[in-house]
Length: 81
Figure 1 (cartoon, rainbow, N blue to C red):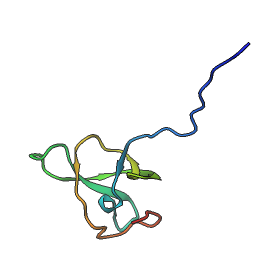
Figure 2 (cartoon, one colour):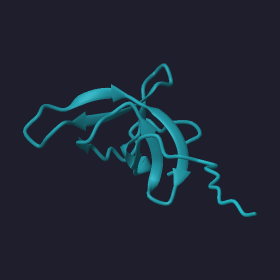
Figure 3 (tube, one colour):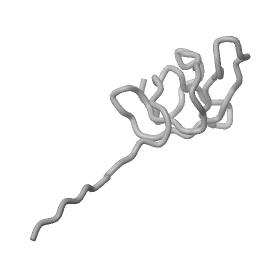
């Protein structure tokens, strides 16, 4: 008798962004400046951060689009640069 199984220990929930895209407001909320397309106006969107991955920091709360790399004008505590 034999069996085959897969164990998922972690699943990505969102996008990986460079840490330079993450900013924090005065209240400590993490956000990015995001655009749906090149022609769309930029908007400030609150995001939830996840794990650090080789590509950057995992975030959820935004869809596909473009983010501003801010150089962390207001660094977020607990986010590596």
